Length: 531
Image (cartoon, rainbow, N blue to C red; front, side, top):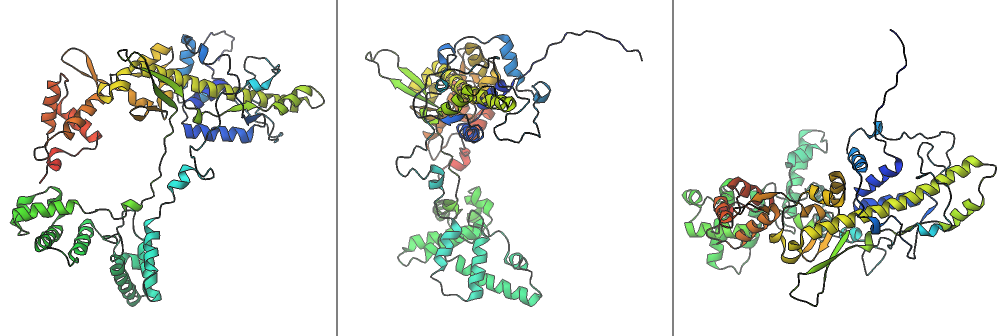
């Protein structure tokens, strides 16, 4: 094998640490950004939360409309590639220096190469106040803590058992069954299987455990909410109907109706799900009229007794952007809207002046390596503040473009939504589609019609008779409007809705209507029909 030297010219993209951080911050949600800021505040001593308003960076929103070069677009797009490690600057860490103030050796935060420190590091601020919890009352409790104060099903049942006079064995069995309930209040496992989990020594001990569990089950099913402790849906509904039948003030007609409903629940549940009245009448459950009334009564029962106790994590959405209508003296003129960032989600950060001044006054010295590490930390803090400001500037630019394109929505609602794709906004702002995708993910906009994710304003188009396009969001809203105005006795089928859309000039197939209806969580016509 012959060895030789050769020259080769090639191009490759290198994502600097600054650009990597900018891209990562851009795709973070508000909560994730808050966590990132807290982590950076803990790690970097040169970074602190400011209280006063600071001047904005020179590259801010005033110059935000400058078109991005094709090279920058390629760099943005390269961030979506899975093998970032092959195209990014390598980072190494020194095992010898474990000081928390030492910077990463391989990451260079020098930016444009200048090492001079600004005379006043207070200029590196972001014009916004620190994130708050939006509570006007107790400042020590946030919304998540308030949401978790709801009593659980198990705690509610245990509190009821305090008034029962039980033996130690029955009380223990009842506690065991309560803790074995699922979130819906059902006891999924058979009593014998639950008894075997306690590892009985022989069959006699197993029989004794099952006996105690049977007694405890009867006690459990007598507690509130009615229907708790049921093994299946049929038993759950039957327990609620039996509780209603115990009312001594019932009229004869009401009692007969409840008895028919109880007999229906003892039949296969698929007959009830299909509302197969004809088959239920053939089984001798009751007359046609009584079966219809009984099914209506069953529909008012609670199929999941523990549903209201489920401690669902309440994700409180804090909008990143606020859209406020601007009052216009001329009422005949088109309405205008003001787009602005929500100051509650913007962290007010600045460089710690005291630490920066000390580092400036003690330049050089004996320990130049430590001085260089601290200087790198200072530059890292500056770039972090810059990238956060650039993140919010980009969000504001994209949001302003969306509002401009969807003016009809902000005036008339979702029925006036027009088709919009990421490329349209990307071309208008001179950014790459991947950047628009990052900006519109997990970012929310507060509008006069509610709070929506930025992605909500993008949607494909359906053809119309006039040759234009109708937004899929507007079509969904139109379908919802048709169904809300339908007759309960004669609900609209998917085919009828498709024909109604064609009358409006929108070409929408029946299968597309079914897909949109299922997306709106609307039942088919057979289940929407009133008895």
